[in-house]
Image (cartoon, rainbow, N blue to C red):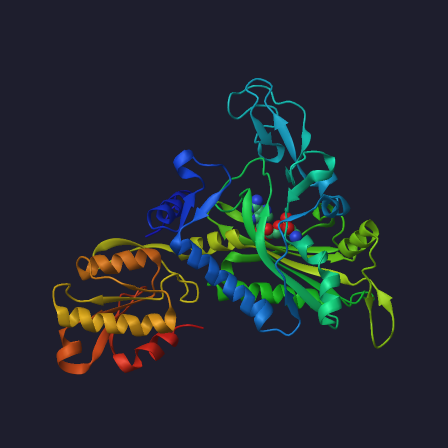
Amino acid sequence: METKENDKMEKIISLCKRRGFVFQGSEIYGGLAGTWDYGPYGEILKWNIKDLWLKRFVRDREDMYQVDAAILMNQKVWQATGHVSGFSDPLVECEKCKKRFRADTLIDAKKCPSCGGKIGAEKQFNMLFKTNIGAVEDENSISYLRPETAQGMFVNYKNIIDTFHPKLPFGLAQIGKAFRNEIAPRDFLFRAREFEQMEIEYLIKPPKDDEWKPVFESLKEEMINFSKDIGLDEKHIHPIEVAEADRAFYSQRTIDVEFDFPFGQKELYGLAYRTDYDLKRHSESSGVALEYLDEETKEKFIPHCIEPSFGLDRAVLAVLSDAYTEDEMNGEKRVYLKFSPNVAPVKVAVFPLLKNKPDLVRKAREVYAMLKKEFGNVEFDDNGNIGKRYRRQDEIGTPFCVTIDFETIEKDGAVTVRDRDTGKQERVEIAKLEEFVKGKFK
Ligand code: GAP
């Protein structure tokens, strides 16, 4: 059954709320625009994505240094990078109802979409969340919630050099929250005011001519490989070259990795060659030398940086969007999340065929304990008929359901394993169950 794309987002949002993936932030107080709270299944999904990212970009490599910098940073950081003066979006206000809009989202630039009133002149709106540190509120106590995790790495570059003495090229990696006072948060997790990023600042020797290009290309490939790790359909991923006029002024090349979201093809991740802009600015502004000493050549220089930047919440939304499926099984409509087993919040569910048969329940509990030890996120369910239990697990994307029936106990010591996508069932010996499930993971 085809799902209309414009309904699809509503259905995903509704499923996320109904099944405990994602809730509106501060919901009981009427919500807080641009904030989302992850429930238990959403949180596991998010961690599974982070874990696959860490595996591909940090744990499986020898050249990555992971950090976790503070969200609040000295205001001088954001002055140095140009965020205080220039991290802004175009804002317009309706002269009649005073509603504010992001100028580039209006269909008619002169008319208010809310009341039809006249739209005023365009201004720049700075997206930094400003706060004050300590008991005194003055110019010196100003701080900002970081709008990107990147700068937490640049300001720790010297610490990493001094403590680990890494050889170039090497990367700094960080996962953490970022905050932007977006004028128009929208499209669920896509554009929020508080969100999470997974970023890498990959540092290389100042390149001669095109020497940076192979590194850029290999990071681009890894970004696509990671998308496959989390189960995204390669056909929905489009690396788009950003034209010079649209690039950040410090970027010599940018690729936006776009994805076919239900509301259109939009940026999922970005890859930018930031040159030596950030380290140079921090060195000039702090007065601290941020040069790298090449032990072999005895040359000193400021490394250049290639930055793969991932929005974690956008990745969650992309995974949900590719997984959301409607079909018919055994003459009944069903909704299920076709997650890759790698990201599925629940890996296996275990059912005794009947709730009121102590032998079945005992055996099912044994199998559940065994699988839980191995896979962690395993559920036990003895509530309602088997068909209903399958539907509940389908809706949260559990790849396998294991049923313990009379034959398990009386005859063969085997269980029925049912596949989420096909509904096909097969008998698997309990002793081989762990291996069987593991074989389905990457
Ligand atoms: N350090 C570079 C940087 O922050 P960016 O393109 O502004 O670059 C990187 O952001 C990624 O962060 C985006 O590709 C997107 O995935 C995510 N992102 C940016 N703004 C977001 C928002 N308001 N809500 C959710 N994710 C966002």
